[in-house]
Length: 339
Image (cartoon, rainbow, N blue to C red):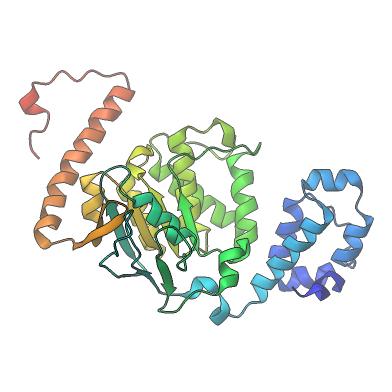
């Protein structure tokens, strides 16, 4: 990392990279004289300043240098610039070789289906780690047909994969607005606009809307998941998104996938939901820890998807009626009339 950034005046860096000011703000570092350098600012910082930042001096320096390195990096060296991810086969739980190779491109949904324990989560982990034959399955990942730079696998700054797990719980004592401004400030120059866009997307996915002053720790499970899906779609640079059983998230799953695809992501979804499974262009079928079949969604399945989606929307309507304290007393044959 280039430590000469520590010797450049902060005013010069902030003019060139407004993200630097957001970085300082996120750490509560008070800059009284922008003519000073980052090195001078940290040398004059007190013990309480580091407590307020929740980071020590060495950690702040490392994060600062990583931020500048990312901002300086030419587009062709950006690990997030690839267009395709290829999964090379490994082996099942008994050591038998898998018989598939998969290449997924931007704007594509790949669904993972199979019984619990059949290996769906293991593939998501292999993708997250950009496996290179060094996981229990022996699978390997290629980006644009080439092995990823080993440094990308170990550096948090170069992560190319975002994972959304089944359980999303916040522990930070921040409001939704503060959290979004903090993250947007590290990623975008239009931080306020990006934060507002992310909140709007989250509320479109959530069963119950929430305002920007809501504390993160007071969000429900579905609201937390909606916020993180929107955050990943709008603010994250990661081209690959991994989702584990979004049907259990309490969010509008079809809108969630549409949002991610509009942001040109490659999406892998583990699911037991037939509607979600047919939303993918292809689905991987798992048995005994391995992919046993790759199925392309057929035109007939796409027609069936329209019917299944209509029934799913009606179920969601009935669910919302229950939430509102209303009764469901229609005769059974009328519950799905008109579909």
